[in-house]
Length: 389
Image (cartoon, helix red, strand yellow):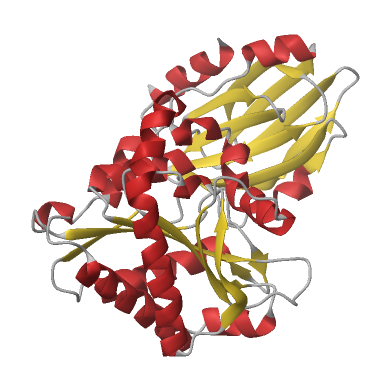
């Protein structure tokens, strides 16, 4: 009840200005039987607190808090809190996630005014694993409707018969994806998606939607929902992974595999889908399992179209001189490929862990061949469709 009271009381203040986080007035410390969290802010803002299980996390969401430049690790001095992360979550909202090393329950929470601005004080106490699991769970996501409307902006003006391509820049917000050499996968793929969208809009009869147009977190099932709302005819998810070594390189294209014994692919799936786990989203909802049989039947139609587009894309990459992986045509059980009502592919544009790939992907001029290949593959795919698509 505390978490809801805290939110409703503060929402009533109507605070909307961008507040700043003050690390000098912030700390996370162990007590004798508790954990004390003190967060210094420049102003009072609406917030909410809840817990998530498997793995155990405490989540704090703030409306109107600027998350830029926050070094969460510097404020954590608690053994019971194993990691702390900040990041954008929804438009206008910032999320703070604390990984808990043991079951802890919310005992007190209060945001108060101070001379320097405001302070949020949270006290956690010990509890049992069973009690923690029983009380864990997220309230409805803030700003989801606004995020969906933003993603679908412009489609209203598209011709009713337009071929709709939904581009899905991987990761975003609290889930930055791979990071190497100062480059973040989430930011890079958003720029890449914008370039592809501009190119695709030059094709006659093609409309484009993006699952996100800024640094916001969109859960995997939400990306599918946006694609369905857009009336997607083709879904392209964009990624650039990073491995421990730099010996993996080149672009590749994935379609759905019903199962995969390839441990490298499994690790890739886990990395791409970690953001949903981090944010507390149930990945099981992505497959609409209640209608599993009907979806399997529908995939008999969409799977060949996804395979056909993937093959055309690899051929177009080769024609454009794109640096390809030694096995450019792959399959994996990624959640963003599970939709049954439209063909989907996942494009690994390259590896940020490889110096040459990273230099290519961060240079707009050197990304153009890949943009051109995706555009050509979409044009070829449309040309190959039956007139009654």
